[in-house]
Image (cartoon, rainbow, N blue to C red; front, side, top):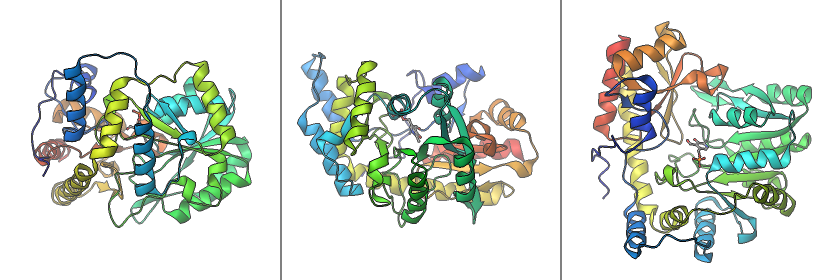
Amino acid sequence: MVNFDEQLDRKGTNSVKWDEICLKYQEEDLLPLWVADMDFKAPSGVINAYQEMISHGIFGYSATPDSLYEAIIAWEQDHHQLGVTKDNILFFSGVLAGIATAVQAFTEPSDAVLIHDPVYPPFAGILTENKRKIVRSRLLEKDGRFIMDFADMEEKIKQNHVKMVILCNPHNPGGRVWTEEELNQFGELCRKYGILVLSDEIHQDLVFSPNKMTSFFNAGENFADFTVQFTSMTKTFNLAGIKNSVAFAKNPKLHQLLERKQAENFQQEINTFGLVGMEAAYRTGEEWLNELLVYLQKNIETTFTFFEEHLPKAKIMKPEGTYLLWIDFSAYGLTDEELENRLVHEGKVVLNTGISYGPGGQQHMRLNVACSNATLLEGLNRIARVLN
Ligand SMILES: Cc1ncc(COP(=O)(O)O)c(C=O)c1O
């Protein structure tokens, strides 16, 4: 049994979550429940693989072994019925690096790219950096969860001549695990207007039963013709710092264009730690992941119970996947700035500000529950103390 209750001190390790945030806010002793990494030790199989590498002591250039391709193909087949082959795979130093390269490969400056609102902020960041036009379609809230507004998307696609969409599947920050039907409708809309889909599936393995992950490739007939999927084991197994990911392009033309752009930027070499960690995680991590999902659900329940008792005016979206909770604090009547300041400078607790996810994130916050239950409770108490 993995002991997810273990309290590990991450301070003083250059952790973005624990150390950088104190510099940003010029505060000490902040309790971070923000950026999407977990306060848990990686699976022992990954640590063992690194220990072996370290005792060997040589860290020269490494080729990508066939065994890594095999591990990826097997995991993606067993867990997501993806049916990818070695020829479909490209490695990147992170999902975002892959998406940025794809944006460059498949669109031109000022082309319109559609994203949802709210959505993981770096999508907009990549588009801004690359001078693409951002078109946002607001997600609607129905029965306490996000749904896509197909009429709005179609209208915006037509108006702006959208060339590409970036889909977050499952959705960060809402924790939606889009159903096959929703993805099918989304995909058919894209097909109708000749739009290319980048599907970010980094949260693919963090899905709570009975919800079922549907990879975009599998959501409709020949969706792979106009789709590139991105994923990584770094989110699943808490290895975000090793910066490694894969892109799957089954359409040879898309694969070729993406590979070409990657070569132009000389991004094709992947660091050895990424290769080793990735393979070890795929090969040995399954049991750890199953236990993690149970622990995360417990933390989600803890949060809901706590909010019901102590912060009943806030509305939390029940996540179907991910360890991220999207919380509506509007009933407290604070501006985004007041909410952030109060939590950080009075409560000494850090969540992600909702507004950074798009205009739809006003007066919201995103809470990361991937920490020990004790840390979570301390954070929740800090939130309650300053809002009540
Ligand atoms: C939806 C999504 N995509 C991408 C990333 C970052 O991936 P990477 O570190 O591999 O670039 C994250 C991290 O939280 C994420 O939530």
